[in-house]
Image 1 (cartoon, rainbow, N blue to C red):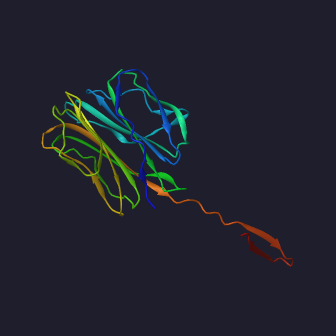
Image 2: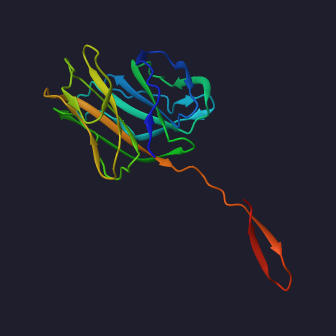
Image 3: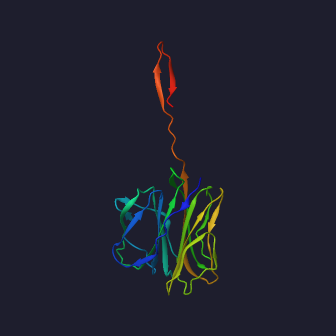
Length: 232
């Protein structure tokens, strides 16, 4: 039993406050991830994302280079949302330019998704990476995002499957996912030989197995004794 990838809506950007979009979650999609790139040295302001009445949780923290950052990145997730269409709201009180990439994952039929672990890192170097997630499990789905000041962003490879790699002119970034086939440490990365400032975040999500209910009817047989008669 393992996760599969769901919808991957097109990347978009805005400097509105708030940033809003109508987003549909399909039946069977059990994890909803929003990966953000905020242009400039200042973090996006305004707090947590929402989808209708549901509030996202941030994985790790906002990541950007400690010295002279040109972009930062965030990863937010919502577990086991109901199927339907609601408004995604991204607070943006500083009116920054924010690029958003949405992604959905699906637990196996009848299952649900739980958060496993996250990693985050930043630097000024080649080959950005959020670092290792040590506790990945077979069946996990991992999402990762990076953003930085690359003038000609275009990695030659990445550890997972590309969602998007985009050169936005004075900065760039990428997102990816990976479906894990075995337990063990996993490190998302991008192979890119040009050194520049960057931040990166990854998060791993595990399956909850479908619930099985064992129903019993207690029968009093007197003298302080009882027996369980299983209902088939």
